[in-house]
Image (spheres, rainbow, N blue to C red):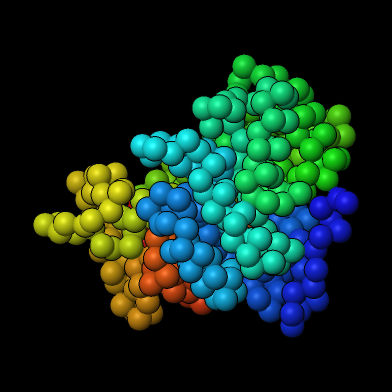
Length: 339
């Protein structure tokens, strides 16, 4: 059975988890087309599952995310091998257990990645083939909706890894392919190769992009995405929690990411962005995280920012991204603060 046979109609809409509306349109649930898929305005980051959120907490977060209208879950085979005692695959395992217990596989879009887990490092065809089967086993499914190359592997020629990915699509193991952490040049080369050889083509790009890290995407990479109609799904959308506003001068935050987030406070840009977010959030009676995500969601090419929640209480501010529309003046204020 191929992946496309698994989609089922979602209650109250003619859309399915895997069927988009017309390009550029949004369905009643705020879905955005991404290749042949249809995704919610917020992608839920799965990096915390099996790391800072245990399985019971992860299930509660996933349930609340879906109940709030979300359908786009992001993970990777590498999550979270860096934690002492973990070996990688923990996040996929938690998500797979949740999918099996809820029986809702056809209602959600699952994105995972290949190439960064030490046991399956790089993008050789043999690595890709073995890694996808391991991911499918952990996710307890027979197809992955969106499969990213986690990091580019320049030791492998573009046609070689694209053919391996194309094989997965033809076999029904993967529905769409995407790239993360890739140069504009290699992305352009990959898209040209797909067109020339009739291979599966990238439909999305996952760049590092947020209000305090704009040059990691804007410019050449964003131009390639726009030119080829790729959807951007930015990671570090909240700058490791800095853009939630919980990191302030003199404050102490108990988080596994405190070190990284706190460094933004030491920069003029970081302090300017917080001040601008405070102003806009007050005007909308919204959380800072909601405004930061709304700015990102409104950027050219962006389909859905990725943000993770360690607890159910962190979710409402993230899910509200689709409810806040920033004015031209607010966009200008945030744009100037983050320049």
